[in-house]
Length: 250
Ligand code: PEP
Figure 1 (tube, rainbow, N blue to C red):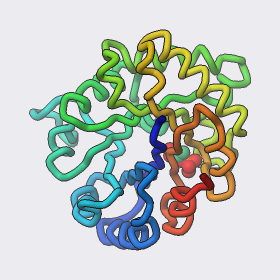
Figure 2: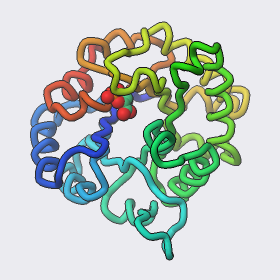
Figure 3: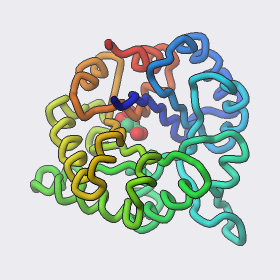
Figure 4: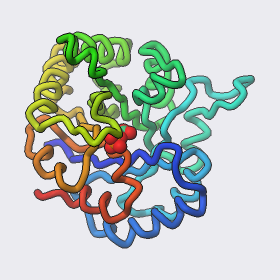
């Protein structure tokens, strides 16, 4: 039985004080939920402050990116070691916005996943096809390449600590959600691929769906057998909406 994960990606939104306000509102709405792993990913500057607010609760803190080296002359970068030090437990890696705007590649994604695991962070590894790729019938080959390259060199025991997020690029921030059937088709493809590589461990790897998840579509998505949770962007910035997503219909 895989425990569901609902993760909120705040992206480049919220100052420190706004982040603290949002997490305070959220705490009061979802503090009683214990059967879902709840994760929030504020901007770097707010991580420490949000982590202080949720200490001891079933709300965990994630970063939205990380650099793979531990320390050194890498101006502007933040390492896994630094994130762990401030109470961060997860890190989103390979988000399509990082791939699109910051030159992230499957190779850099792989280095970041390896580094995060070495420092005890749980990577939330994102994959997804663009609309053009979907329309050209390339969805499965793109996903397979991203999964194989992103996870290159990882053992089955490493995979026990990895979460995968399938996020079709055409559904992110567009209001256009994949249907439950479209998402499940890709999730079950990823599960089969993981089975081929990692055998039985594949059954315990959580695969989240991301792309315009809202209070009104989460219930349907969560009925699908290979959808183990959601990575939520826009709707995670509204406490009521995110709380409703966390409290999806069981
Ligand atoms: C995301 O940023 O990971 C995401 C899925 O965004 P949204 O929910 O806004 O589509």
